[in-house]
Amino acid sequence: MSHIHIDVENVSFQYEKGKPILDRISFHGAENDSIGIVGANGVGKSTLLKLLVGLHLNYQGSIQVEAIPVQKETLPRIREKIGYVFQDSDSQLFMSTAYEDIAFAPRNYGLPEEEVEKRVVSALEMTGINHLRDKQIYKMSGGEKKLVSIATILSMMPDIIIMDEPSIALDPKNRRNLIRILNSFEHLKIIASHDLDMILDTCKRTIIMAEGRIVCDGPTEEILSNQQLLEDVGLELPLCMQKRS
Ligand SMILES: Nc1ncnc2c1ncn2[C@@H]1O[C@H](COP(=O)(O)OP(=O)(O)OP(=O)(O)O)[C@@H](O)[C@H]1O
Ligand SMILES: [Mg+2]
Image (cartoon, rainbow, N blue to C red; front, side, top):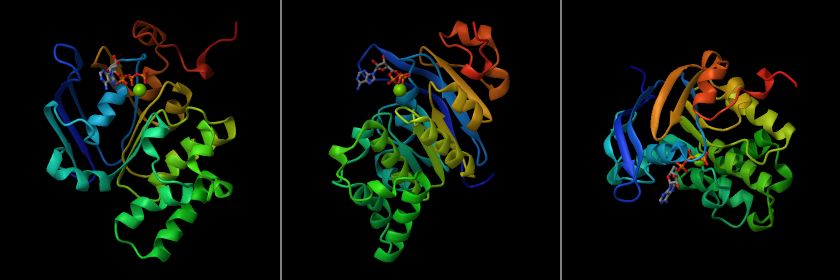
């Protein structure tokens, strides 16, 4: 088996006693997988992604990233492997400027400042935000913060990308560029989104969640063209498949 993979086995989780949020979730993500996670508001998509990067550790079952169990002692190693974009950019960005935030991970790896700068410049270039390089984060719009968040994980050059609603707040051109970035990333990526058209353009495989469970896991084109299945879980066909009325 390739070294890049994620294994989730029988994972259940609750924030508060007696209120199960995730219920016996199992799936395997392989090196070349691109997986869309879809489902109505509140079904547990963000919670599942947070568990994969170790933001909540009191889960039942097993989560392994490249055969390393996700637990307190392994978090630094797990976080080097996964580039994770939060649904809420304010939880992601904590330095004062875009440059400092994007430089944070490569600096943390102990790379020489010259290499750090190269990575930051390349991430700014890829996301089309050279003009935001020295702008203070607190003065940025929602879309600008999202683009900086995406750049912070590109500068990491991670094995695995996990993004939670990455197209939220992006204008059509930046959304199109995000799709290009995602499609140029060659390893495992897992993307939770309500933007089913983006999932269709970037993910070969789709997992549908409902009430904390996986109800369907298969080829995106089959799943996202199945109107009945989507309606049963409170979703609709991607816009590109909807007939104009
Ligand atoms: N910190 C928390 N404490 C208690 N309950 C929480 C917490 N975070 C989320 N929840 C609850 O867990 C459930 C799943 O939330 P989650 O954010 O994972 O859903 P989601 O599928 O990502 O929804 P959305 O599509 O709106 O982003 C919701 O009922 C939510 O209220
Ligand atoms: Mg969410």
